[in-house]
Length: 198
Image 1 (cartoon, rainbow, N blue to C red):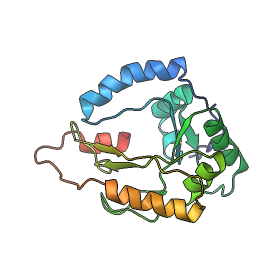
Image 2: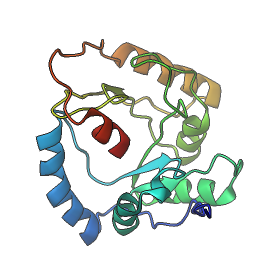
Image 3: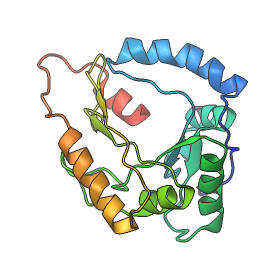
Image 4: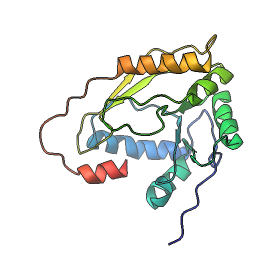
């Protein structure tokens, strides 16, 4: 079986404004997500850096991503990819927001942080933009109507920081913001399906 080719980091355009396809998917997707889960907020035009290895094998999801954008492929085997750095710099230069998961992967347990990588700090310092810490709780394992908590902290200025100090500040802020996990009792409908889908 042939392996699916992994996309380049700059496959999709970056911009401040939402495209028509993005608005259309949001129009349909937001009510569906609100029906399936209980969470807040849903932000406009964010470009997520993420590994596309699994996504490209899921034809429907990959089609949606290709049409709406908001995704910057990060292939782990392409260390130091100039296209990735240029694309993120461009997204920030045009006023877009870039979302980076600084741990790089899921930890062994919900609510426990892994050490942060410094990539987000380098991008923020170079572009002169603040880092907005966001803590997520309840996303490792999903089921129908599960409560997902999104806690947004105060921006951390990048000015006067080193990559090391900004990384440390981001880690400490997320640690403070991370809500305690309290799994609700009851049936966990569609658990395997929704966890694999998202």
